[in-house]
Length: 392
Image 1 (cartoon, helix red, strand yellow):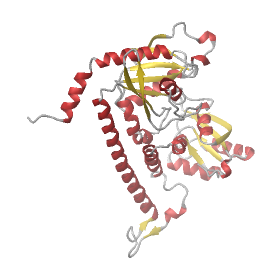
Image 2 (cartoon, rainbow, N blue to C red; image 1 turned 90 degrees about the horizontal axis):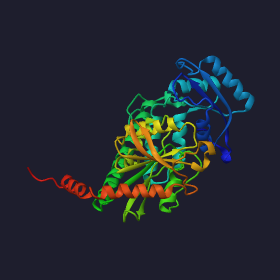
Image 3 (cartoon, rainbow, N blue to C red; image 1 turned 30 degrees about the vertical axis):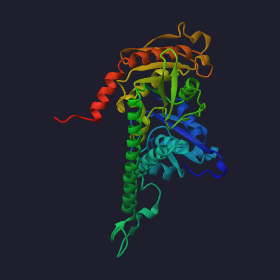
Image 4 (cartoon, helix red, strand yellow; image 1 turned 120 degrees about the vertical axis):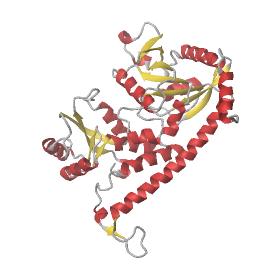
């Protein structure tokens, strides 16, 4: 992103290309929310249709000329694409438009960098940023064309600056991965301790801005940061939730929200955080019931859950923001089932902000925890056998 003096929002043009694929956001609504979250100011939204991306300029020279003229008329200082650009396309567009050009991937990375608070979260964002940067070393900097080296200079005689920079980035990636491995081991130790205490682990998952953190706060009376914006929560927060009907406490974790076209680098980098979802006994899949595109958002969450190995964990769907639904759209029953990938999945309509449906949700969670309690002795015995295998 460009430097923003005095935090003044940069006037930005949003561009989206419809390649005939499903779920195209014709209004660029989500990209606009992402831009505002990152501190940008959308001043125009431009969409076009193409059969395939232009190899050089992604949108083609004609549309690129149109974007350049619009930027000059509106005083835009940046152009933001809703799709991922290749390093060459990004470089060519910047030369053609004479403006900084960024894509959805970098925008999400920027938001994550702004929001990460924990040591682990910062490490994960740094890894994803380094992986993204490693493919874009030839983007703007003419110094990368120079050669370095010579007697006593690291890199060897004749090594190009770009090769040296790439090697330095690769070394940084390696170090960051090693530090993340240590964090992951610490988390695994904490999980084993919870399992020895016969804990029942529940993870909140869902599309970003579905209200996960608000629901988390309402259930455990916590003060985790919650706001009506994308990616309000990045770092996993875990609290104990006492369920009176079950006569026991369960472990409840709030995790990062998912989003369409989440960069693969972020999925890889956030494995340690998303591991809370992978190791859960139950997933509370929070859905923004007031969003007309909720079926697509559910499908995106399911795709990411499959990618991280959490697709087979039992789920309960919480259709949140019931209070935001028009009267004619409100359900006759607050509890029913929803066909989730061919499985009849329990669904509860709720409003975390208003406290609606939470009693029914607690009752369902207590029932699941009680059922799991009857299976815990076998789980603990299996865990003990895993940690202390007998000699054959």
